[in-house]
Length: 182
Image (cartoon, rainbow, N blue to C red; front, side, top):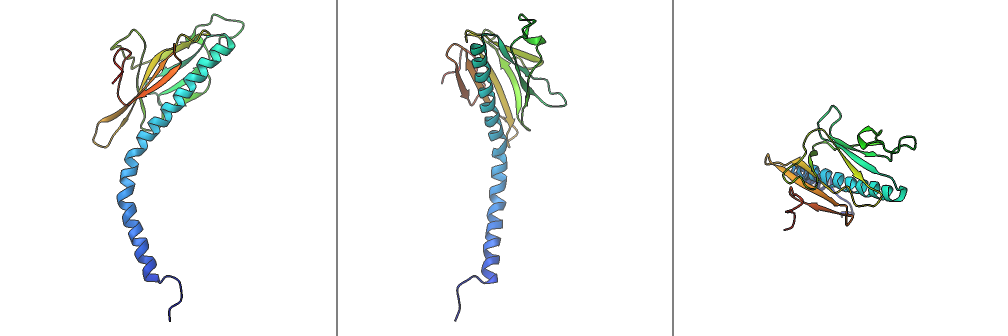
C-alpha cells in the first residue's frame, strides 16, 4: 500500500515541464524589459519635473532641469538645477552647479527635447536647460525617449509637460506641441 508523497519520477517530470515552460517564457519577458525601464525612467523624470516646478513656486526663485543628450562615457542624463545662490541671485541656469545626476537606464535613449515654438526643432545634441519660474508658468517641454525593440525598430515614449496647467502627459509616439491629440 502506497503512502502520501511524490515519487522521484513524478518530481523529475514536473521539473522537466517547468524547465520547458521557462524556455518559452523567458525570451518573451526579456523583450519587455527595455520598455518597462523606459516607462519607469519616464515616471521618475515626471516626478523630478513636478518637484522642480513646486520648488520654484515655494522658494520664489527660478529652478531648472538640465538634459545632457550627447552620449558621454556615463550615458545620457538629466540633472536638477537649484535656485541661484544668495550672493549671485541672477546667475544663469547654465552656470549653476547641478544636483544629483539621473542617468538613462541601459537601453533607454534620450532622443531629444522639444521646446514650445520650435515645431520640428527637436534638440538632439548638447545640453538643454529648462527653467521653472516662481509663477509656475514656464518650463513647458517634451522629452522623447526611445528603446530598441526586437524587430530592429524603436519604441518611443513622449513625456509632455505643460507649465500652464502643471499636467504631465505620456504618449506612445513622438509628438510636438501642435499635433499631439489623437
